[in-house]
Length: 251
Length: 103
Image 1 (cartoon, rainbow over the protein chains, first blue to last red):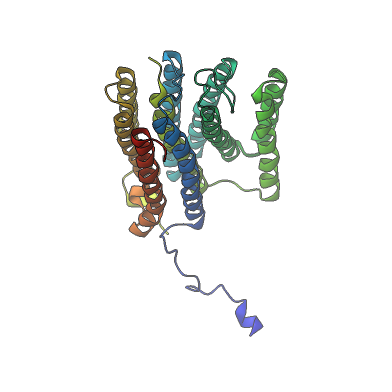
Image 2: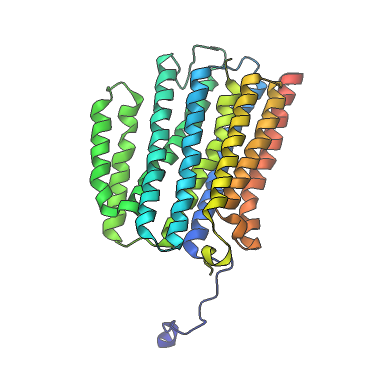
C-alpha cells in the first residue's frame, strides 16, 4: 500500500486547474483580491470623513495637484512598460524584458520620490497623523491621509524591489543596500524617511533569503505574476488620486 | 493550463491605446476638479464612475483578465463587488450625516 501511494508519475493523476491557469497566478490573484479589500477599507475611511465633514481640510493647491498628476502619469506609464515587458516575455525576448522592467522600476522610483516630496511639504506645513494646521477640528485628516498614502507607497516600494529581483536577480542586492545607505545617511534623523528607508534594508534581507535559498531563472510566468502585482498598485492609485487629491483641492 | 499569448492577439498597439485612454480620463478628472462644476457629493459620483472605467481598462487589458476563463473572472469579481457594496453603505451614510446630522 505504502509503495503504491508514492507512485504519482502516472499521466492524469493530477487534475487540471479549476481556473485554467497555473497556480502561481491564481495565488497572486487571490492575494490581490484580499489586498483590494484592505485598500477599500482605508479608502472608505478617508472618503467617509471627507463627505460627512463640511470642514474637511482642502490643502492641495495647484502645485500639489500638478505633482499628483505627474505621479499618476508615472504610474500609468510604468503599467505600459510592464505590460510590454510581459509581452516580450511571452515572445521569449529576455533582453527586452529586462529593459522594460528597468523602465518600470524607473517610473516607480520617480513616483516614490515625488510622493516623498509631497509628504515632506505637508509635514513642513505642520501636518502630523494627529493634527493639521488647516482644520484643527478635523484631527482624523492626517491619520487617514498618511495611512492610506503610506500603505500605497509601501506597496510601490515593495513592487520596485520585486521587479528588481526578477530583472537583475542577485546583482540587485548591492544596488538595494547602497540605496538604503544613501537614503539613511542623506536624511536628517528627525525626518520620517530616515526611519522609512529601512524598508529597503528589510527588502534586501528578504530578497537575499529568497534568492539564496531558492535560486532560479525567472521565466515568462514569473514576469506575468510580477506584472499582476504592479498593475494592482497602479489600479489602487486610480482611486486614491481622485478621492484624496481631487476631492480636496484648494483652488 | 493556457498561455495568454497563444489564445489572443497581443499587439503593442492595443496597450498604447489603453494607456492613452487612461491618460485622457485622468486629464478629464483634473479639469473637473479644477473647474469645480459639481458639489462635493456629485463630484464624488463623477470621479468614482471615471475611476471605475479606468480600473476596468487596467484589469481587462493590462492584467489580462478579459482573456481568462469565466470562472476565474467571476471569482475575482467577488472582491470588487464586496468593495462596491461596502461603498454603497458607507457613502450613503456619509451623505445622511451631512443632511440629517449625527443621531
